[in-house]
Length: 302
Image (tube, rainbow, N blue to C red; front, side):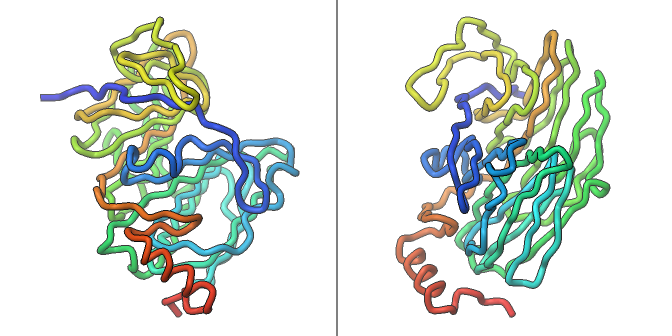
């Protein structure tokens, strides 16, 4: 029997700075652990003013996680300690498994008009895979299929499946799904999500209802950082929806279309010890990682 997922909480992304001073908006991060398990962080970098992003993210380490970068305008130049180098552009994805340790840099560049827009998602790794061999996957826009669904709904499938279309990223520990979905006006989109998996949606354009129990009077802020509601409100750009459990998500539009990222994955349910770019299970493992970085023994791969 199908059960519709209900909204647990809704946040609005908040401005912050990272790297060498890049201005971005954080949808969720360290403060929300373990609510989004197995996911750790989602950043939205969006600006048409190059000084906001040109200083980028110079060489830095990662261990114990996967970083997933999705560009929808502009490009990001990258290089890493495995010898990978190049540029991901509009519509491309970089899926990097840091595992036992990787050192890399990410340098954003805008398009011809100076516009840069993209997202970086961090996914955790379980203790048994924290020290797995690092790997890098660069997926071009042409390799990412688009499913056309009932009512004219379109979904770019980075990983997972939609309407019988399977994404190119596979063999990931947390069994994730990552879709870029556009729902036309006056349309309902229903998508199956494996029960027990954590699911979230991040609105990047337009507005829509993300659960059938609409309550137009629920658009009230509770506290400073999030909306906490029993029922659904109308979600617009930079709204982050965290779903409760169930077997499907239902999103409905009225006069306007909505575009959003829909992400799900299998929770890990392990302790999280996190400092900066390294995420392990214990404080001792963090100490060892940073000590190795200082000694030059951090990299385990050739």
